[in-house]
Image (tube, rainbow, N blue to C red):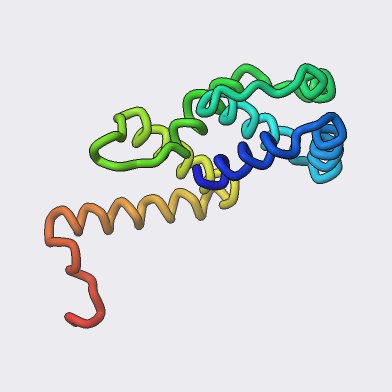
Length: 140
């Protein structure tokens, strides 16, 4: 969230047509067009920021699909919001869990992912039944 705020402030201060042209060219060259659009959705949702029309035109050929739009607006944005017991909503916890799972899904082979989550669930079950520090090496 802090990084998103920094991006927002940089855009507010340095935003002109050449800036947006450079950003879209860099995103295209580095294959980060989807991430740029996720960032723009988050800026719009959280800070009510509207990118200039020519940015939408420049990104027109690479628009987000409807599942990506749902992901960006309902999962990504809620996952990056600050989480604190006094202000967090259930949807934020759900969104963070989904984003966490997706991050692992993208990075790991599926067999490793299944093993990883089975081991994690086993350890969480042990924590619930036997207490938080039952496997600490200092106690063995």
